[in-house]
Structures are given as C-alpha cells and as structure tokens.
Image (cartoon, rainbow, N blue to C red; front, side, top):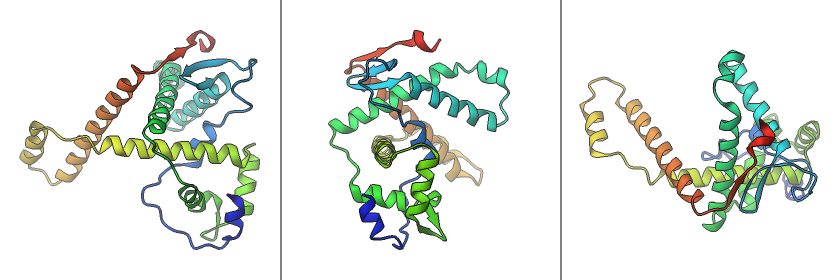
Amino acid sequence: MLKIMQGNRFFTVFLLSVITIMITVAFVFWGIGPKDNPNISIVAQIEREKITLDEFWRTYDNEYKRLKDQDRKPEDIEKMDLEDRVLGSMIDRAVLLIAAERADITVTEKELQEAIMNMPYFQRNGVFDQNVYMRALKLNRLTTQAYENSLQHDMIITKMTRLIGETAELTPEELKIIESFKGGNKEQLTGIFRSNKTSQVLNAYIEGVKRRLSIKVNRDIIS
C-alpha cells in the first residue's frame, strides 16, 4: 500500500465524512508478537480471536490515562470496575469483527489508503507526507502492516456500528415526547433519543451474537 502512497505523495486530500477514527485507537489494539505463541498469556478467546495480556494492559493503561485527563480522581476510577469494563469492550470489539466477517463487511485498500492520507497526524501543510507517516509509526514501535491491519479493523467496526444503528427506530412514545417538547432544542433532544436507542440496539446485537460464539475468559490473570 505504501508504494501506492509514494506515487501520490502530493495527492490532494479528500474529506472522508464517515471516518472519525483516531490514530491512538489503532495504536492501543496493536499486539506485539504472534498470538499463537504458547508463551503469550491469553486473557480471552472469542472463537479464533485472542486477546493477549499485553493487549489488555496496554488498553487498560490508555483508558486509565484518558480518565485521568478528564480530571477523574484515582479513587473514583478504582470504583468503576475499569478492568472488567476494558475487557468487556475488547471482547465486544472482537465479536463485532467476527460478525462483520460473516456478513462480508470489509474495508477496501482504497478506503484504507484514503483514511490514512486524510489523517492530520500524517500530514505536512495539509497534505499526506510519507516521511511523517513512517516516523510516527517508528516512534510508536509499529510496523506498517500492524498499524494498517489495526486501522482496518477499526474501520470495519465503524461500518458495523453504523449499519446496526440504522435499524434503531424511535418508539411512538418517544416521538410523542419529542413532539410535545416546547423548548428550542428539539433537534438536540431527538439526537439524544436516537443515540440512546442506537446504543441499546448495538448492545442487544452484540449480546445476541455472543450467544452463538465460543467465548473463553481467563479473568484470574488480570486480578
């Protein structure tokens, strides 16, 4: 893929309205070393997908730092059952990837290329710069293949989430509440209702898929 980019080094940046993935998310989910190495501790396995202990703690540390940056006190964070929350989100991520694969939902090479070229982290003067791209990956101890695979997974999950969210419909009761609202922020209220409904539909979908999958969790190694 980088050969394609190199030939388009000063390629005009296209705006991707549907991609909002941050580079830090992809960094979090990058694993070091092959997952079939018997010396690597596995926290959870969803069908063939494995969550290693290194991946778990890297994700945990990132989430802990994010909460601290929001001025959350350490004692408050400790009350949040953060370990369970992080592990749960990583399992849900794996479930969505499996569901996407079975539904033939993919991200093309072109989509992946455009996503990378449009990330401000990899740009100089508003245009993708391969040297900046390679330097950023090197600083984060990432290979291009590892980063691009992880980003591709993030984009697939984004597609899945949007498709599932499109099935969410407000109930007549919810629509009635919105219509009866006398304030000037009816659109904002509608957005809140739709966001909550989408979250409910997504959670229900994930739980439904989980019941059809083989999921093994080794919770003791993170206690």
